[in-house]
Image 1: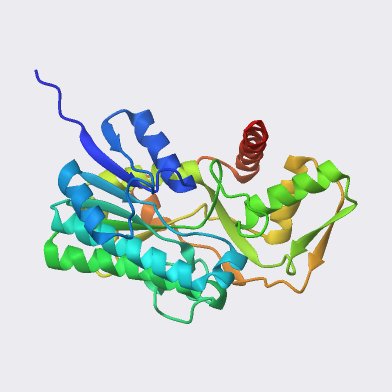
Image 2: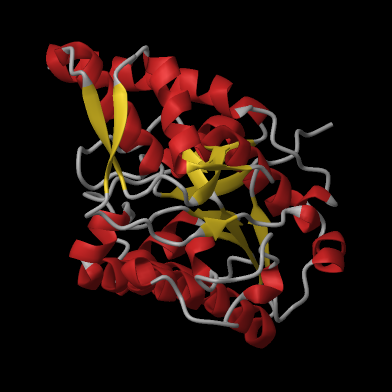
Length: 325
């Protein structure tokens, strides 16, 4: 009997934290042929280049994990880059996928799509019901546009483009930039450097009292692959055509101070944690409801402190590699 042909799967953004986790997951399953391109080989903001790539490669599934991302500082400092690059990438990939006959696509968004003061836990239907958090509004608007592109192309062209909205992520491949990174990688670097220098104290942005939910990126990758391959009738039994995205979270949140204390324990930093009240807190709370995704059979498996330990190991490996080079 002839062996079934493997699906050709394009992971856009394969070098990023999310994209690389998706690649690891698909490779572990061993039932697909993965296609990747570096940004130097394929500029996703170039419509013609994306069209030519899809025409030549005959892709079956697309995971759209490519994006311009960053923490509060980066979002507030580079709003033009965040809205432009993300709109261009998702517009080109989604449009050209549909135009070249690709029926299956997974778009990765963010929990920042929801209103700043949305009722907790946040359900998918909260989208567009209130004002966004000001510091990352351009990025959020771009991600909302991606969801609506998928929904609109589904309605007009009969494709099956799905969207997942992950909560705050961490894990291997994260960005540990001292200024532009997200909460957990920023804390890992800050506490590591404080430990190495013997600092008696280190600063935490804001009051530390806002609450955040975190998910290990490998748990997100498992959600992506499961959701992409759930039969259409099953997926749309929990997601409606006009609210087609699903939340992905751990269903547990902590104050930023509690997170900082966990990171300090993992890193081995024993100094004081002090607060820089000149820095913004951001949204007071972001806890998402992941009940719809759970009904499809997914659940997170990596607990936070365990995941922080592996994230710190990945940071140390990255630092050692940087020194060696």
